[in-house]
Amino acid sequence: MRRIMETRDRSQLLTEQRNPNTFTIDCKTTLEIIDIINAGDASVFAAVSGEREPIAKAADMIVDVFKEGGRLIYVGAGTSGRLGILDAAECPPTYGTDPKMIIGIIAGGKDAVFRSAEGAEDFPENGAKDIQQAEVNHRDVVMGITTGGTTPYVMGALFEAKKRNAKTIFLCCNRETMPLFDVDIIIRPIVGPEVITGSTRMKAGTATKLILNMLTTTTMIKVGKVYENLMVDLRATNVKLTDRAERIIMTVTGISQGDAKILLKSAFGNAKVAIVMQKLGIDYTEAKKRLDMHSGFVRKVLQ
Image (cartoon, rainbow, N blue to C red; front, side):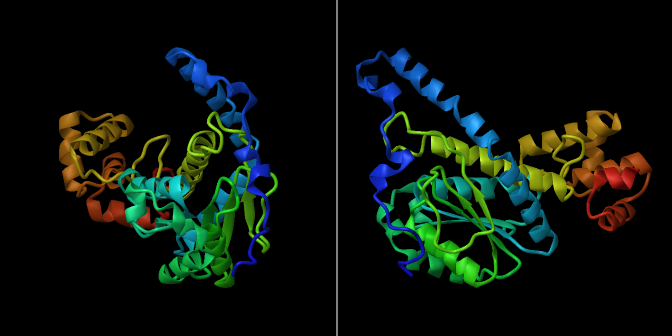
């Protein structure tokens, strides 16, 4: 299990190098520090853009997995693990997904989300065990997030996922790091040394958040969770989301907010169904049937 990645001197990794632009940051004024951090962050967007092709390839692979009833599983330690959990947690209210469709796994378990458990990342066997407990199989895709590219826990998880014939994605921010086993897709945004040496919760973390946003947003669009640029599959579970659902219905159909409120209730809180009901003049059952026939794509139903 220990032989699943190259052993290397971490001091040579780009993410561990000192940033020559911030040697004197401890002598700067508060405003100067803010400007330095902001200037460093500006480079992240180009690094992510440079990985647009593997990101797109990963999104298409995830779409195929979802169509077969599989899951997207993020695995990481520390900041990387928390970002995966954050992205997974935001999909059900935004897109009405099953909470089991996208999940995040972090080294150290749930307690590590709120309190650092850094020692938990040192054991690849723990990553493998968590993949086993998640009952990962050939229909799933597992994305290992390790910005340094060397986290044993993540490597163990990816190795176990590969053994189970799951699809695999490796996300890191170093050129030098590579698993000693095949992965399907590598996403490698090179953000350079951090403002504070080795603090990969900064630029590397920002790049990770951008990429996860791209992956889940793109996949949700491709599986019919979006009409035009509207989140028509959101769950109206609180005042804010109910108001948003009503405004979405108003935007698409042109009816008043009062009518949208009534229509949303008759559609059992489902904005997508409400839109189809209003646009085609049909009842809930028929609208739901037509959406099911077209895999949930509003545009296809209306055409």
